[in-house]
Every structure is written in structure tokens, then in C-alpha cells.
Image (cartoon, rainbow, N blue to C red):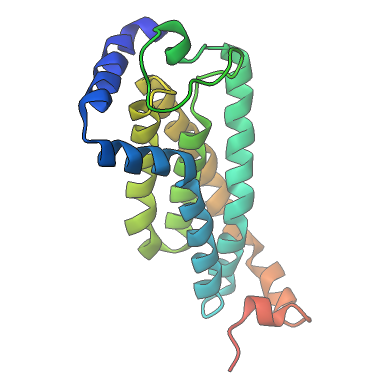
Length: 195
């Protein structure tokens, strides 16, 4: 699998080697820590859903669960293919430290998590998609730029996240009656804006 886009991978990592140092630092930081933005967006979705319908709250509460399910599904695929990291097989100079042998490359967990979060957040609160969707695409691209994934790893990772998240986020809306019941309990301050 690595042969069909190995050339593209090496062109991207070569470009990274010749890019301004500040740009490489920004992309490396994003690649390593950017998933935290999705956690913040999940909190924003929950906070805003407190002023909204039970359906929207149910979807917002489901986003973290959906992301975990997408990660697990992606990990199952990863265990089936056992593709070595491109930095192991192509021996290129990379911005990020190359993961150890046996830390499989295909598909990208970061991309699957970002893709799932972006889609689930889009369904939960569409306005957040303006941030979440570009952030997911940038996360995927950054994983190739820093040298830890082939381009096909991140594309399939994004697709896995999307394909898992879309039906689960739509299904989460059906939990609205449960949210309505919980809004009449001690959990009300977490589920309804007061004051």
C-alpha cells in the first residue's frame, strides 16, 4: 500500500524540511496537541445545548462517546493491516520522532478522532462545524507533514471517523426523551441553563 503514495509522502516531508522553522513548529504543535481543540468544542456544544432542545442536548452529550467508538473502530482496522510507519520504511527525515516498530500507521487515529469529532459536532451544533471541519482537515494534513503517516492513512482515518460518527450522531437524537427525564432530576443544572 505504501508504494502508491510513498512519493507524495516524501515530497511533503521534503517540503517540511525546507519550510520556515516557525511554520514547522506550529504544525508540529498542532499535530501533537490539536485534538484538545475538539475537547473544547465538545464542551462548547454541551454548554450551548443547555439553552436548546433535548434532542440537541442528547447529541451534544453523545459526541465524546461517538469519538471513542470511532477510535476503537479505527484501531480494529489498524490491527488488521499492520502497516509500518512511512518513516520506518522510507527512512526519511521527519519533523516528529518516528514511532517505534509495531506502532501501526494505517489508518491514522488522529485523523479518525478528528473526523468523528467534526461530524458529530456538525450534527450537534452546526455553527461549530466552521471550526471543527477545517481543524479536522488540518489535523490530517499535519500528520503527513510531520512524517508519521502516509497520505492514504489520514484519508482513510478521516473516512472511518466520518462513517462511524454520522449514523451514531443521528441516532443519539433519539435519546431526547431520556434527556427530558433527566432535566427533571438533580442533574438539571447540567442539562438546562438556569437563571
